[in-house]
Image (cartoon, rainbow, N blue to C red):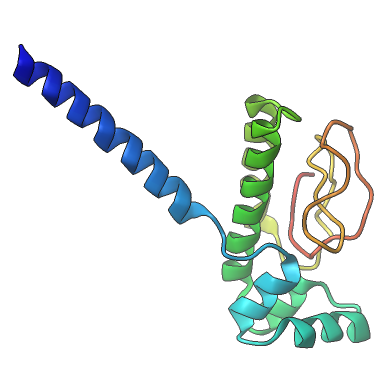
Length: 154
């Protein structure tokens, strides 16, 4: 009986450690669209921010022109997942709403061209803004604001 209990405890510990490791691994090392663009293109944040300001291009377009749109999209989705996870943990959003937003974002990635024209920003995700943290607390039906050039919820 003791061996069974030890085996169950060991299994529980391994499961918890595995879950924590996967969560830590999945976290993006970037926090803003400018950081993502700079990181995937090998440029500085100042360079990509200046290009965006001077040309009016989205960060997604800048990444696409460098042949790095897929990497940009992957990192942006991870940032959004992190934001939604924080909102769920803070009690500002339900896990079901966050899951629906993540599903919609991932579905929209297949048609995203980096221009930012696919954004609908409904469902209360609150993404946008210059700092990549969004606007509002995610409770509204529509959030207005400038986008990073990633396709989000339509």
